[in-house]
Length: 100
Image (tube, rainbow, N blue to C red; front, side, top):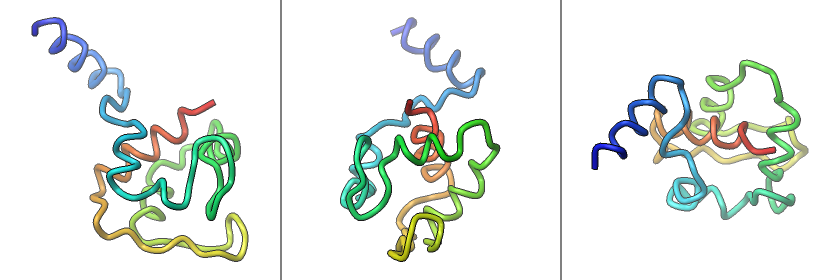
């Protein structure tokens, strides 16, 4: 129990998205249009990570997750996802951007 708390606190201090994983993306229905490795309706998460590598885009992309958007990846728009909170959107974006 103590080790789990230490890991959790350590991750929080260094900014690692502790709960950012595929399970959250599935829970929020992101995986209906995206996969990690290949384009489906939306771009593959690894392609998103490559496109935005080294850029400070967490807030911008989190906003897109919630409000939707179009044009960055073609003609099919990404619908709004109001069921995703700001904190969840930022967690998801950090996870996506961490994929290599």
